[in-house]
Image (cartoon, rainbow, N blue to C red; front, side, top):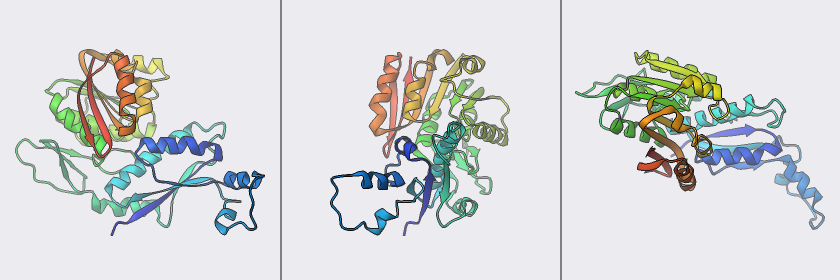
Amino acid sequence: MDSFIQIDIYTSSQAIDGITGALAEYGITGFIIQDSADFEDFLADKNANWDYVDDELMGLKTVEPHITLYVHENAQGAETLAAIRGLVGGYKANNSDGYYGNIRIELANVKEEDWANNWKKYYKPFRVGKSLIIKPSWEDVEPKDGDRILEIDPASTFGTGQHHTTKMVMEMLEDIISGGERVLDLGCGSGILSIAALLLGAREVAICDIFENAVKTAAENIEKNKFTSFNAYCGNIIEDKALREKIGGGYDVICANIVADVIIAMSPLFEEFLNDGGKLMVSGVIDERVDEVTAALSENGWKVVNAKNEEGWNCILLEG
């Protein structure tokens, strides 16, 4: 029987629509919204004819606005929680005007630290593509000839390789990395894609994320895998020209495993990072947005040369 964890995201009434829209970008479409503003709307309805108000509606009168959703109590669920944490962390960092209220995440009936330990039992070594084996530090594996071991532990940052978006990028990297490439990992999360690229023969990588914790975690993970040939950057390349200049150009491959809206916003910028003949990989795109993303990239001179789809998620390889 499947076990689920309840996640409650507390915020303000005005922020709910934006947050649910962002959750949909992560493939999360089933949620429950409880909002005291709905009770106020009900009272203000002059055309309503009622003799009593049921307990459920009355319960909205004083409720703190929040979104409830459920994830499987397994490794995939932990990936989803990490993505939600990152999303909420971004809202917290941009909440100086209080638009998002007292935004926070709570797990119902379970301590987050307990779940963080309990779900480790689901995270076992697994193979990606022809040669990559992804493993946590507490598991031992016996590699065969040609196997490449990528060690990464679950953390609060998205990217243990369990999610389709991450796995598809690693599979594509295995096809296009031939040795000596410079790779730029935008929205690096845990750093898993950069580690995979280095294991496959890339000469060096650059990692970038808007979250300081992600950059720190990614750098630590790269070093744990015994690589030192990387540069780390924190910030928003869409808004920060100085950051783009610091990252520089001449890369052979860009990996952007993010969400549709961010990829679309970045689409005019990718070219400045790549050398002639460079390749762009975008992932994290749900089926409902794939045409919109490819159209934006096409408008900026990119041509699709390969694409993968798994359970509603898309990874696209493009050339300029």
